[in-house]
Amino acid sequence: MPEAIVLIPARMASTRLPGKPLIEIAGFPMIVHVLRRAAAAAVGETVVATDSEAVAAAVEKAGGRAVMTSADHPSGSDRIFEALQMLDPERRIEIIINVQGDLPTIEADDIRAALKPLSDPAVDIATLAAEIKTLEDRTNPNVVKVSGSPISPDRFRALKFTRADAQGAGPHHHHIGLYAYRRAALERFVKLPPSPNERREKLEQLRALDAGMRIDVAVVKSVPLGVDTPADLAKARALIAG
View 1 (cartoon, rainbow, N blue to C red):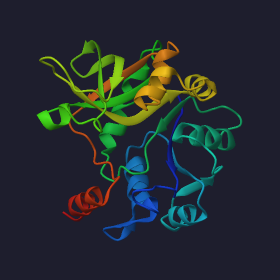
View 2 (tube, rainbow, N blue to C red):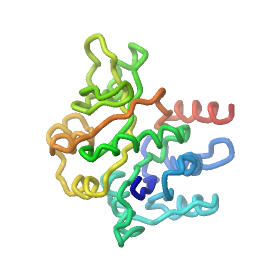
View 3 (cartoon, rainbow, N blue to C red):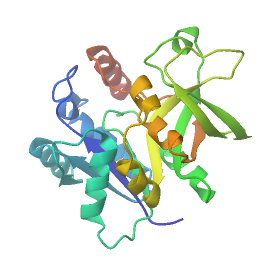
View 4 (spheres, rainbow, N blue to C red):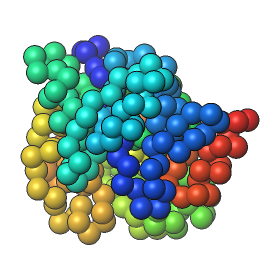
């Protein structure tokens, strides 16, 4: 496999959970839980890209590595691209895995699964999804749905991402916002302007599809808990303590 790196973007400007990366869960900041789970995937060096000296200090105290990036980035993709340029000016790294900093229950196996579609040279970006099991999730606009063309029982080519209700008999899939990019794909992506579909749905990945980039989806067993609200935080604390 080509050389890979895991980059975890982390910013402090969350509106619903201020200071989110440093919120304590089972004795450690949330960002440290994500860092350790990503490192356990053993797919390459794991680095946190942040605009906060406090986050960088917490990561380094836990034995991890952090790099300081601009506070002005509009997205995590832009943040990890800046970090990549600083960390690898010689361009040795070919695969970049973007793990969100608010996924403290992400499984190492799922991070590894995101690399599998990139064994096909036609794939620009790989991501994850899990089958939707409940009617509530089928109709929840906060659950991003992804659909496409099947390739195997655990992989398909993404043709549509949407917040709209999942229609038809299914199976329907809940998109998980973890991405594995080829370096050239990430470089191209961050230079593209937001597309009309991206602006309408507020889904960054539609920019890549609209530009003709190929995204394949690895299907995993379950959706990791994303911590966006106090209720999510309570669930994460219960899961990790358990």
